Image 1 (cartoon, rainbow over the protein chains, first blue to last red):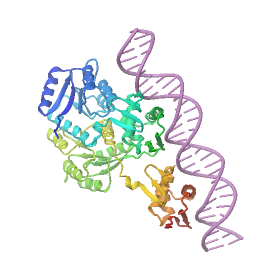
Image 2: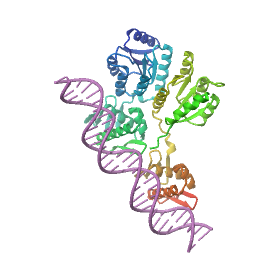
Image 3: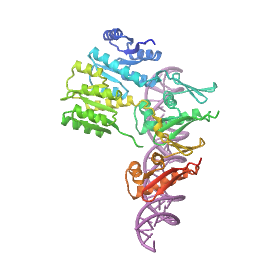
Amino acid sequence: MEEQNKKILLVEDDPNFGTVLKDYLSMNDYDVVHAKNGMEGFEKFKKDDYDLCILDVMMPYKDGFTLAKEIREKNSDVPIIFLTAKAMKEDVLKGYKVGADDYLNKPFDSEVLLMKIKAIIQRKATDTVSDSKQFEFKIGNFDLNSKLRFLKFKDEETVKLSPKENELLRLLALHENDLMPRELALTKIWRDDNYFTSRSMDVYIAKLRKYLKPDPEVEILNIHGEGFRLVVNQKD
Amino acid sequence: MEEQNKKILLVEDDPNFGTVLKDYLSMNDYDVVHAKNGMEGFEKFKKDDYDLCILDVMMPYKDGFTLAKEIREKNSDVPIIFLTAKAMKEDVLKGYKVGADDYLNKPFDSEVLLMKIKAIIQRKATDTVSDSKQFEFKIGNFDLNSKLRFLKFKDEETVKLSPKENELLRLLALHENDLMPRELALTKIWRDDNYFTSRSMDVYIAKLRKYLKPDPEVEILNIHGEGFRLVVNQKD
DNA sequence: TATTGTGTTAAGGTAAGGTTAAAGCAAGTT
DNA sequence: AACTTGCTTTAACCTTACCTTAACACAATA
């Protein structure tokens, strides 16, 4: 198998620093795409799949946090590292709330950055055994395309899914016939486990049940206090 | 709902700082075990399963890196955060080489630490999928799935079990044909052995008997003053 | 037979989940 | 700026699930 270089999206508005960093990473066998601002960053992100995002926090028009939120909406999995000039605590906290994987204060040591990148990507590689390319699922008579976010019933009706609907159904499908713990969905999709996110999730379960109604063999069961179970009854 | 607190192993030789940090984390709903040096840390690590390790780097006899290496040998998965007084680059690099998940310089902001812990544990929360065999029992013509909490009769009828019903039947199954002492169930499931919990248990025995009625070969017998016995009569 | 243990059913409280509607919110449009 | 639109959260109200307690019966044992 051919080792594919890892792809990094670097969003940094300072042109000098940006190009230097890009070159440095490229020299270390990463494929780097450099965007000069938040808007451009999001465009590039939508156009390709990345293994890691490195975002400058302080940028005109669209700062790193806002960009991170948008990225998380599209893909809750990709690791994110924030770069920031100042070490303000509020910023750091904000970063972790958006789901940062790490945080670096400028100026930083480039070797340290490399190690962090390595550590993070490696972590992802072991965590995410096979699910990186798992975007298509068969659920009874439905086809779920979780990359394009649609649910098709018997090549007939097609429903578009919102990001949350999509992620939730995907998680359920990954655990088909097995328990999908509440906590898992809440931490993975909502990134917070409290009363409100929990209720929000229930609302989404209701929506999914409605979508799945056309096929009586498919149902989402609740396991009280534990989570949900997507079951597909075979009739043969 | 019974949320299981995450378990943290804290290895820190400074007794003042250590206890303060431990208390702070405990207040934030983590179960913290505090070891005063590397050796003790490794002993405690071997004795239990942890969701996260926080290791001081500078410790007498056995420093944090050495400890981390030993931990990695036993369990390559557990996240590790290093604490260090000095921000020496060599140390940081060394830490990442041993597989650190994060790095904090003392003094650090406790809120930041909390966020990091949250982020890291959340990251880990990905699919700790099943060692299913431990949860499945055959009881006469019944199949008990104690993870998904259901009891199936001959691939026909399926009953959902409540947590208490499930745990009780599981305990009985573990002792099939043998005595399952009252006291065992009460301490393990009800966590208290008194008149009321005992009566409550009797109520659950009655419920289980009803569920098991479809198979006349299966019954729950009482052993007066001792406990119960789940018997499966073979006919052949 | 007195006492204690068990069998069983029903009532009641609390927490979790189901469902629908309204309120928020962030883009993009007019 | 005001208006739409799509998505998400919050709120409200109701139902279901779970567990305990009470009550009354019968069984076992001393």
